[in-house]
Amino acid sequence: MTTQLICCGISVLDRVWPLPELPTSGGKYHASDYLELGGGMAANAAVAAARLGAQTAYWGRGGEDSAGQVMRQEMAAYGVEVSNFRLCAGVRSSVSAILVANDGERMIVNFRDADMPKDAGWLPLDDVRACAAVLADIRWVEGACSLYEKARALGIPTVIDAEKADAVAFTTLLPLVDHAIFSDPGLRSFTGGAVLNDDASRIKALKKVRALGCRVAAVTLGAQGTVWLDDAGMHRQAAFTVKAVDTTGAGDVFHGAYTLAIGEGQTVTQAMRFASAVAALKCTRRGGRAGIPSRAEVDLLLAEPAA
Image 1 (tube, rainbow, N blue to C red):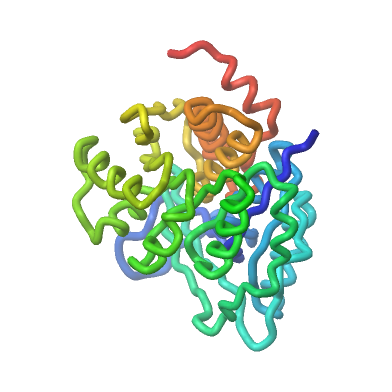
Image 2 (cartoon, rainbow, N blue to C red):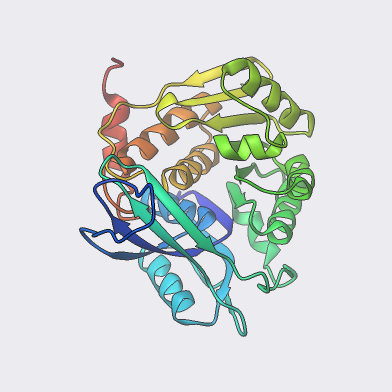
């Protein structure tokens, strides 16, 4: 049976310019290409899960504009169910300018319309009953809160993509989350800007996350792998060694893969390794979505003996 997931949160139209290296000052720079692609944390996670074989629905909002139409159509083409990707009149969709260097590093400038409607009363929460797991990012607190409360009431695992946010977003959502997976900047944001440069400082922060009710608290660290804390203590998943071409969307893809693995009944350790493999393979290719691997490709990497 195909695993059913819901991913709720932000969708962004990414406009991508590949460059030899990232700019360090003002001036004119020549891009080797130009790409216009759908992006956004929950949206990319939904595409990743669908690419890996899940039956996935995306819940979110965009503007009733050309960017919103492009994002909706592209996501549907990847096999994501988008009937609850609502395009709202009178507001503009979120867009990003992304500069990507040859070494895979990137610079992102994002616009989000502050007038985007926040109400989540239209979400079809009865659909959650059919899910094996749900994911939300931290960009639409009202939508995430509604989804999490319903999933918790039904005993369905909840996962959050925890990026930079204000304290209210964290204190509202984290008590409803089973698996809280932060980026490094996201975890620093949660702590109010603390310096997190070693395992001791990160574990201290993750303990505070778990104190809010999260069963698993994790932080992804790119090439340094992933560190997480659960009832058994601290754990680490090393990053897979690959030649990075483009890291855009790697964190989002990690979250989608992790949520799928949890929905399939994998252990946390298995899910972390699976998500790490998916994110690593994505980084070997251009594009936040075009670079997402197939399940067969991931299985091949996981079958390789440890270095």
